Length: 315
Image 1: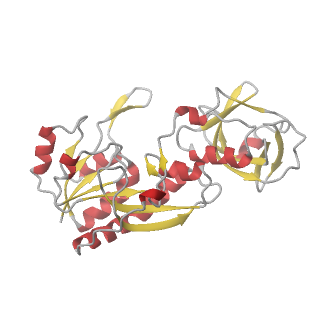
Image 2 (image 1 turned 90 degrees about the vertical axis):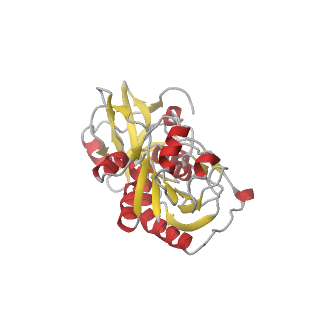
Image 3 (image 1 turned 135 degrees about the horizontal axis):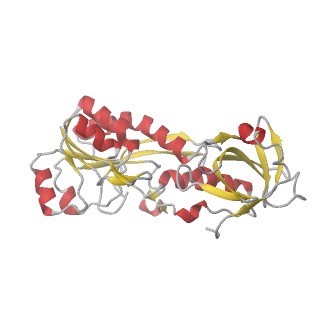
């Protein structure tokens, strides 16, 4: 079976290499190179770099016009595998592949159809999420389910953590789905009535209000890592939050909202909120490296009693 692979993200790299070990990949579709860094030099994504290194034909158009479609048809692909590409395909393109198209989606569909299922699960405080390998349909993330696997989300897991987990779990699931397709399996229809939807995070998602509960704030902090990252002001400095947890206690309810009220070498830096205690676990001053809470505290023993304030507006 000849596979046409589509992705623009390093999360798909392990899937790509696993498919290469078992199938012929005749081409790769990815997004155009993007400017990166202070010099804003054009940079290739990891999928494109890997495909070029393995001498696989790469397409990176801004638009899938008829010329590109004809070039892809000329490769005579049997099936398309998509994992984190970022664009919706028209029927004319999907019809190129006689054995159909499959997509790797990091949620337990029909829950969290859309652009940011990993972030949505963490933002909502879910304890369980998963991966779905589905047949592609014209309506986004609505196709028949071929394979599903669930996994646990720990209270302090970030979107970055879960992306790495999804990356490592997905290769075997894709191979299982491809094997099922080769045997004629059409998949199990989704219950569209149970569908929920999510959209991309925005830069404003990094604004927080310490009057919210510690549970809500830690979810936002963890969901926004690696982007856009939650931050707050401490005196005249911006502090970036990379990882957090929470405690459902009210021992410090008489203290100011946003105040750093305690330090526990085993649990974190305690910040008072509208309900409960936010545990800061990893923080950063802009332009410096990310520190665990112990190192951050040891570098400033005067933290207790200082008060965080929100930056910008609410989300």
